[in-house]
Amino acid sequence: MSSISFTSSNKLSREDYRRQKDLEAARKAGTAPAEQDEEGKDINPHIPQYIAKAPWYLDTGRPSLKHQRVLDAEKEVIQDKWYARGLRAGPAATKFRKGACENCGAMTHKTKDCMDRPRKTGAKWSGKDIKPDEIIQEIELDYDSKRDRWNGYDPSEHAKIYEEYEKIEEARRKMKASELDKQSTTELVKKTGERTAGEFSSEDEEDDEDKYAERSDMPGQKVNTKTRTTIRNLRIREDTAKYLRNLDINSAYYDPKTRSMRDNPNKEVDESEAYYTGDNFVRYTGDAPKMANLQLFAWQAYEKGTDVHLQANPTQGELLHREYLQKKDKLKDTSKDSILAKYGGEEHLDAPPKELLLAQTETYVEYSRTGRVIKGQERAKAKSKYEEDVYINNHVSIWGSYWADGQWGYKCCHSFIKNSYCTGLIGIEVANSANPLASSSSINNSISTDKEDSSSIKKTLVELHNENMKKSKSKNTDEDVNKHLKRKDLGEGEIKLDSKKLKKALEYEEKRYKLKNNEIEIDDRKRPYNSAYMGKNTSTEAEITEEDLEAYRLKKQSYEDPMANYVDNEDL
Image (tube, rainbow, N blue to C red):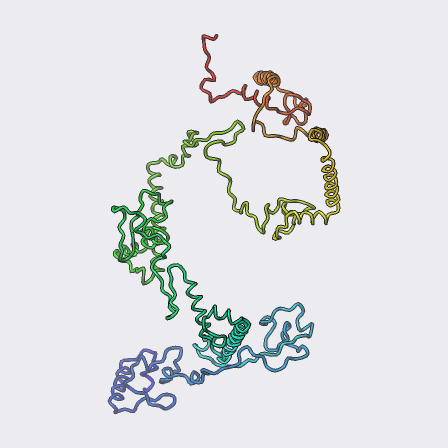
């Protein structure tokens, strides 16, 4: 019966339940002996059942209060006791031992747990520099000791830092004393007045530090050397005061107590160009509007019965607001789809812009005869995700602007290393000297230029001009074969037209126009090879001239001209 009150898990009958209640009442009255636990100790009958009853994972089937007592193992925890952490025991072994770490040779850990730098050849194969074994102690730590970052730290190690700084300070004092001894007495009098060299001490050093501290005052900040405190002002004195932005009486109100001006003092100035637009810009920029919307949503949700508080649980408020926005967008899309499905008109929403439909815009652009923009907005350049026109390491050209021997490089210095520093003309000379062919050609060029310079001194300007013309003619004879491949910009600069050539070009253009109208096709077998680059002749010397271009423009039919199809009956 003694164990029924604590350990009975089965359902009791009415008689057993009555006996149990009578026994508990007798024990509380003192007429029945108290119940005993496993150790023979009496159990107080006045202890409530929720304390005396053991949980299911500690229930032994007998009445006991052991689950309420502190375990003896927890009392034997090491507290405030230093233990060797990170130290190694004794001298290292001279030979590799079986089962040791293959990297460092220690026996206390495996290769995968080794914290040393991975060697190219481990201690197992080299047999050199075998590390000693670590000191491993089996210490039972409690919950807090396991998570204590300073557990096992020796405070005496911190004394080494003090000693190091004291040595540095002592060396600095000796150095300053030696410098003062080297100076003459006249220099000391000029600097320190009536002081002598023997009166310098640590107080003088502190005065020097205070002097430098006064010089290091920043705008809006004052350092008091006596109390060693820093005083910060509300604004930087170099800034223009807010009440001086606009001296008009009817301008924005300035509160001198809080030094605030909420409204914009210069409303006539564009906000993008204004230097100061009032203190209210803080409320409408950055994350301030987002925070205001969150707070408003939290208030409205709380009024509708949702338990949300932005300050108590900001994460919940953020998630609810995000979910609300998603549902709102989804509802808007569904309502839009339902209206379109009921009334139609979806084709009007997907209509192209008016610029494409009407083929005209209000933007004024003026072009040259060759199609270049003279006046107006230029065509937008295609943007790239890569950086453009960014030169690094003093280069004046980009990587890939030079190609030689199957390698890319920089054109400014002929360097093939991408992260190299630009060496300019010196780098080009060094690259040419490394290549014997390039160096020989550069030497020959330099010799020829020297000869030309020496000969040009003796010749007149007329003779030099004639020689240059002859050289250009001799060069052009070699390039005449592929002359039609070299295109030049026609219609640019000053244009001089020959009347005879223009007349011939107009006659040829008129013939070509007639052939085109009569739909007489030219046999492709009789077409020359480079006919796309040729003009009116079939020879390779044929090239489109300024006269041909002008004749094409004169004969070209302008469909946009409203007077193109106009015919005057009187002229007929």
